[in-house]
Length: 170
Image 1 (cartoon, helix red, strand yellow):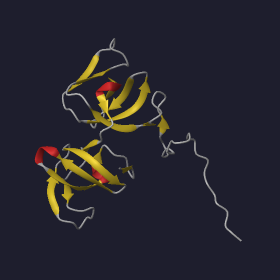
Image 2 (cartoon, one colour):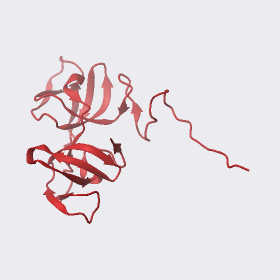
Image 3 (cartoon, one colour):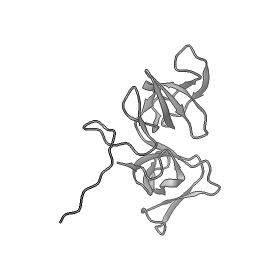
Image 4 (cartoon, one colour):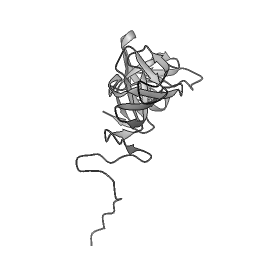
């Protein structure tokens, strides 16, 4: 006698991956919300509301800075930066290119290692808020690059703001 196959009902359309717990589909794009993105532009204005009619709250001048989209409204995205500042940005200023920063909450440095293993050789000690390009994550470790210093290696996923705990990035 064979065992029954049990599954959960999943709210997803054909061709769409199921969403992780706590995520929804954006009402404009159908992409997961929240999700991490990065600044595409060298200069981007964060506004207090989703329109050019709203005042500028902050001007970012760091292309590639990670942002978290928390809401979609037309062509506008409500975003949050690693410091917790939130506001609205025009969607065209954002990219799906994954970047991150070493956790601003860390009291010590985060080791950049040669392999995804706590006993692997430490290449560098990364201080809080160091920017990274995320190549991939397996749910525990992320392979990252630091373009400015021509370095690459592995950092524990929990030490990075720009990926969710357990998230797999390919």
